[in-house]
Length: 371
Ligand SMILES: [Zn+2]
Image (tube, rainbow, N blue to C red):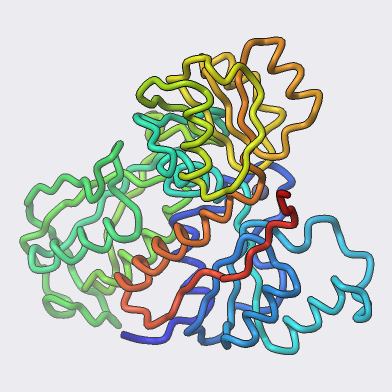
């Protein structure tokens, strides 16, 4: 086990929640501080409020990964007797970096919307609003037989070889590799000026474009040869379609019963419901955060009920007239990402041999009280 630096941790995080998944003009990535430092404590937060920063200081955190970007509108100044200025000052003084993963974390597999769908027990959840189609590349690498297993492992860990729900997919065939080490070489096998032939394995797999650089870097690092022979091909296959929200099914129940399930599943005391409480629901759409503008997607895809936060009065009227039930459990249900991201990132760090304590912020950042 070793202590990772911030870049290494974020590199892992971005395999899970790549920046390219974010909606246009979203504010994501490193917002405050630096990643170029050793990190052994990471806190996962929904919102970066001053209390959350105080918690991070008290717990000796060096990096906060937050869902809601603390800097959303461009700053005109940093005046340290305003709340925002003071927050930035505290973070910088304590060398705490803040990294935001907003809509890219909504879209990611295992991200906010998947976590919400799982918490409600949705069966066969699919994307509600497609926003991104993964582009794929084929990668082929030639490896001496002795190192084939290791290279396959590295390709799998770094994110190559995902086909549907299968990971670590690859194809290997054996053959003979030939090379003549020239002057100034230091060959892993063979000698300068002598033609060599070696039993090699051709490993081929598929990799999402956004992970290509990372996969190639890790593969070249793990490969025993001084000069690694590999090819990258464009492919026409369409990769996975990703997006915001999820739609799936539940065993039929009434809207009223389902509203109770939402309260339990998403750990909220109250929900607002639009629609006839005795109407049956079976097909359920959910979109974390403010999903007002997507209610027509839910209607179009045949949802009986659409769950989202921050429902406006007029959206509720529109949905009512369209005959679509709605449930608003509040925007704060996105707090589910604290536990979800903690688990996912902890597992990834452990697999990479990083000694780092990753934990969820314990501050409740819901501004609303229900009385
Ligand atoms: Zn949100």
